[in-house]
Image (cartoon, rainbow over all chains, first blue to last red; front, top):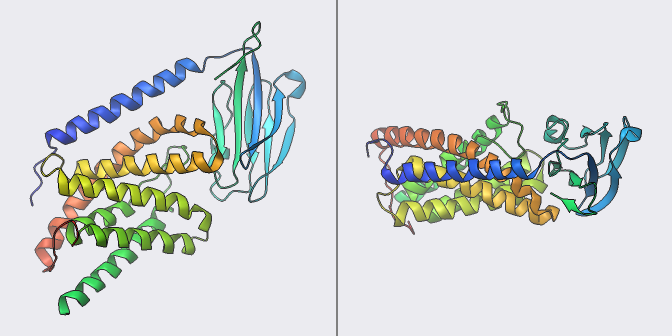
Length: 129
Length: 177
């Protein structure tokens, strides 16, 4: 079989995948707007273990969370949060860096630790993603 | 009997090539920090097995490759992720190759495989972590899978051309080959 370039089906497939992914990235970005009050939710092995309301008083705090492989250390900044240390082998969660927008999350699959940011509207007692 | 032995040897070679590619792949730094994103070089082998030896052989090779690599790299917990991805992508690629003759080239089939792999891994991960929010990563993985799938497909086309020229592969082509 000689290669005759992309077929029509290929092109339709590629364009569809591009459209779907770019559109969904934009939808997610518009849904995760910046809000003044944010909540950090830390989950380990499928269960929520810690929950903080971000504020200046928590700046510089570190939290030790026990995951499946060992401890994960999470650093809380003024309006953001990151994975400082992790017992996982690939360290993708540390490479992810700081997250600061509600709806963003850091996932450590090997250690089964998830850090999620939720936004809270000031007047309504409601959680938005 | 001779044909059977030749096939057995080729399949074992393909398994070991898949394992080697999987391990080499982990040495190549990947510039995008999205968890689960990878080149998917081992899919070259899966797709080659599928088009040369058929569906059953492809399934055997990819399952064996997953089990052995997870033992070799010392992370048996990742077996369920790689196995689910490999099996779903193999099923969809086999379907696209044998039942939609001519619509997709091998590049398209390889892209289908990459997307199926992403979908399966994200689904399994969100079931294990009990968090559907992981699907937020899917669009990023889809774009990456588009590029890696494209080049994996090209690699398969080139490899197949050389294999057919230089080896007399006594293959039984077909879905149940």
